[in-house]
Structures are given as C-alpha cells and as structure tokens.
Image 1 (spheres, helix red, strand yellow):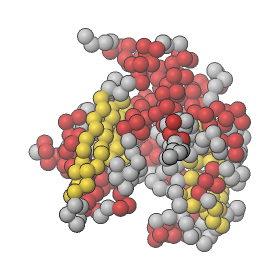
Image 2 (cartoon, rainbow, N blue to C red):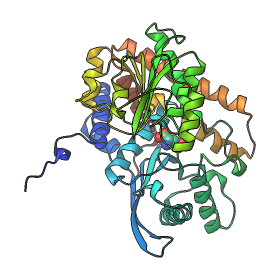
Image 3 (cartoon, protein in one colour):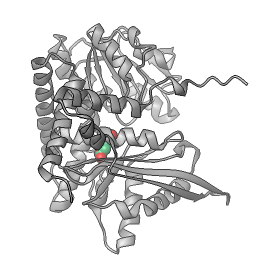
Image 4 (cartoon, protein in one colour):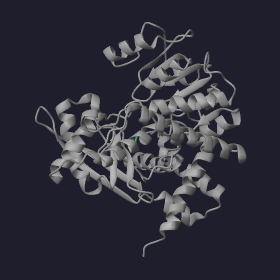
Length: 422
Ligand code: GLU
C-alpha cells in the first residue's frame, strides 16, 4: 500500500518553535548548550482522562500539561480542548508562552495544557466531568504560585470555573488565583474576555501606521472568527478599518464594501459559523488568507500560512492573532516579499497580560476598574511594540526575530542570575 505521509516532510509547530529559538540564540551568539537548556521543557505531564459519557460508556482521553519554563516565575498558559492535540503541539505552545510572557515582561514562565477532545461532540455535563478529571490528574503540578491555566481554543470561562472549583475542593478552601479567564462573578477581570483582541487591534493599527496606511479606509481580512478574531474585527472596524472578509473553519464571507458585523455576529450566534451569511459572497476558507487587503489577521490555529500559500499572501501587514499561524518557511517568503509580520508573541499577548492583571487582582483581593485594566494593557502593549520595532530597525531584521531575541535574552538573563543548582 502506498502511504502518502506529508508528516515526514511538513514542519510541525514544534519544529518551527525550535527554529525560532535557534535563530535568536545565533543572533545572541549563544552556543548549543544554551539551546539545549532553553529548548527542553522543565516538566511534562501526560495523563489519561477517563470520561463516563451520558449514555454510560467510558472514553479514555489523553491529556497533557507542559511547563516549558519556571525561571521568571510560575508557569503560565492556556488549556486547549481539541481532538488532534498531542504532546508536541503542547510543547510548542508552552515554549511560545515563555517568550510571550518574557517579551511583555510578566513575572511568569510558560506552560500549556491540552486535552484531546472535540468539545462540539460532547454535552455540557460530559465537558464538566472531563475538565474536573483532567484537573484532578494535573493537580500536583498546578497552583497559584506554580502554574496557572487559562482559556485557549475549545475552553472558556466556564471551563476555568470548573478547574477552580475542583482545585479548591481538593484543598478545602477557595483558590481564585489558580486560573485566569474566570467568570467575573468568581474573580475574573473586567476586560479579560476581549483582551487578546484589543491587543491585536492595537498593534495592527500601530503596524498600519508604521507602513504609512491610514486605518480609516484600510481593508482587512480576519481568518478565524472565535474568541480572538471576532472582537479583533470589531475593534478594527471601530477604528475605521473596513473588514472585507472573515473566515472560520467551514468557509469565508466577503464583501468589498465591508461586512455588516452586527448582522454577521447575529448569524454566527444563531448558526455557529459564518457560512451561509447572506450579507456577502461565500468563499473557500483558505481564500481569506490571499485576498488583496492591507491587513491580514490569522486568528485561528498554527501553520495556516505555509510555503504553499505564502507567495499568494498580498496583504501589506500580517498580525498574528493565533499562536504559530506562520511556518518558518512561510515567514522567510513573507520577509522577502516585504510583508510586515507582527509575530504572535507580541500581537496576541494582550490575553496573558490581562490574565496577569486578573492574578494580581486575586492576590490583592481588589477589583480594578475596566478603565484601569485597559489603560495598563495599552501601556504594556505599546511598550512592547516600541521595543520590538526599535530592535528590528536597529538590527535590520524582522519583527519576529527582534521579539524572539528580546524575549530569549530576558529568559537567559534570569537563568544566569539564578545560577545552576547544585
Ligand atoms: N491562551 C492564551 C495565549 O495563548 C492566554 C494564556 C493565558 O492567559 O495564560 O496566550
């Protein structure tokens, strides 16, 4: 039998994450010993999560939590529920969290969790049982000063509430700072739900201004219309950007005069997809990436911009709302084309920044106003953008290499100051 196996030739997110680290260390002139130390996750836990289904069967799910780094503080990062999630994907995502937290100067290391489950195929009761059992399995390694989960693809504030409750029940008292992205009623932060999108819109507007494109009248395509893409489209449109296309995994809708986002959101709330929206023309999902627009925001999953379609990406600016949407090979093609790519660890850092604010509020037992949260978010995002841009200009390099260099240097510096035990 002939087996067509692209997996042997196609780079995985982990390959890309490793290459990005290698580039940063080459620039910093650090050797292979530093690479080995920084590429190796400090701690990895793989667990079985047996789930009793509503009809009495038992499904055995695979779950993971990877703590890539604990050097600058407790591990921090989301939890992903997705059928294809595996240990290598979680390793890549955990490594990116380390650089992201360092880049925006949060006192955290990096982590990520995953559970191989398709949330759309399970009842709420099944998701609750799976979440609680997963939490119980990883309980020994999480905690407000050890590792603090948050939402990611397939999880939400309800998931965080179940994790908090399970953790608290085991300890015998309420521990709100064990997770972030909680419901407001349980100590969630005002502004957390839209924080990633706010940050994406903020740096997108800064990037457009940098290349001399006025927001008013600029066009944008948003690929991924979930937690990140949907509000990012909204904030961009409020700033005057014309959202001409949005896509989800099922398809895309396009309208050259700009989509009516109120009508679109109503459609998505009813049908759970952009597909079938009659306020625009239907396109294939992938077409959203190659439209003739000023700004492209990939806001779904890893690897959507690859060697195959990168030459067709004509947007002047790409802002990575997703983690790892551009492969290393595509990154090189985009750089050669003169496309300005704002990397994930900068572009989507707004989420973990407000996670940090939520954690800080829990530690203070004091709620900040929405204005305070949004002002402090803006300050951190703008500072990181300015720093990355200045580094990129000074060293004539891409924003990704600049961001990675700043972040990796910061983490290695912390290693050096702590020293090696024993
Ligand atoms: N999952 C988000 C990310 O990839 C948020 C992580 C967090 O808030 O800890 O950045």
